[in-house]
Image (cartoon, rainbow, N blue to C red; front, side, top):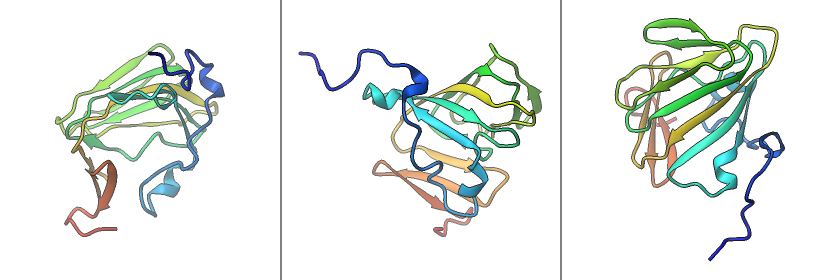
Length: 159
């Protein structure tokens, strides 16, 4: 049986961006003001992994530097020249380059757009239940509880 409510194919740029840019509490959410994600996987009701077409404005970041305990992540740069920041330092990326982040390594990562042009990339991550996220540069941790992210300080007190 075919589900006719889902499209067979779409133009990625036509998928509406997420209404809320970040689920993180303030003061962290406002630091992501220059990021826009189009949830491509959701259009097709994918449940095992997510795919986002992400735009980062000049001077903006992709995310707070973070590491997942259970979820693998992968990025593929389509446009622009972001700087990838990991525990190993900085790596200049260009279109056609990709990077992967294995779960459980503690390797905090994110992209910076230090250029004058927009960065566009594909972001793929699995949706493993019970994930936790650490943010090595910020007093923040996230825990997936019943399908919702719960944000706490490093000492476990909630935001």
